[in-house]
Image (cartoon, rainbow, N blue to C red; front, top):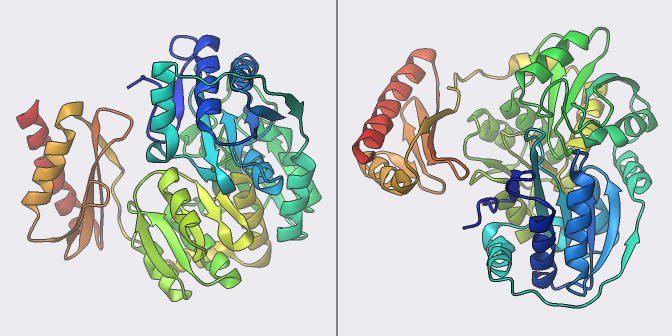
Length: 443
């Protein structure tokens, strides 16, 4: 397996793993695989983004596939542009929230459905490695989609009377965030607005402690703080009194808002707190767990029209009820702003039940031993109610534990939740000990 091909995207360091040469070959493999006359391409704001993108586009054109270039724009703007302009496929040159030395690619199938490994990435990798490229001469042209995107968000959200602090983390969202939120009617204070691929202040990641602390510190008389990641498909939120809103709570809040718009299923990754299914049922929705990873959620949304909202603990949020069925941090920020302007979210969050949860432990584990360890954990807890959808999720009388192999690193992940701190400590101690003993056994 080529080192920079992963389960959900392509990502590697520049130029060691992905230089212009590899980028052109990726373009050739993608153009060969995609059954489309023309594809939409956009890129993030990394220092080497222009060079990598030009090489990638050159590769696509060499297969006879036409390219329509959207320029330097956030990933969800590309997804919107794909659907709004009826492109059968789209690609974004981005490494999301990774450090500056990284570059990468995300691919979409029809309807802005994220391409999974099984949905095409594996075949593209095979074409790449065999160099079995089609040949031809495609044409290139440019397209402007920022204004259409802003208009579409405003049409869905309406006018907002709110004061917001927005931290772009020097990512690509800086090209439109101020215009978007001012168009919605917000009073906007910007942090790290300038697009700078060196990310000089902190990583463009909503989960970064530096990003959270900086946003909270700048938040003075404003009503809401919003943090975007490097390519704009993720968002995090800060309230003046509550501070950073946990992603479980964000999923619960967005679920309620989406279910007002359209009743249906709410899809969330199986690491989420039991707060999520409780709130989904409370507001008339059908809770549905899925595997960790945005391609699995994207594929589930496109299986049928019954999904109202979907969310991940990583901060990817999807809004089918509002006709934004892709992971869109920008729309998430706009919708959260509307919600804050219409209700007291601080008070609502204070009424939520609190279930103690552990941090996600990531324990070093030999790559070749992951499956055996997972199987033994499942056997060890065969007398409990378990799910093996993604690793092993074990139900205890007073909580649950999730043991799963990392899809990107040689590690096993352990996360637990319980009714009380004492229950959590007991469950975590038991399960972590078993996992570490098995890792030692197979090392």
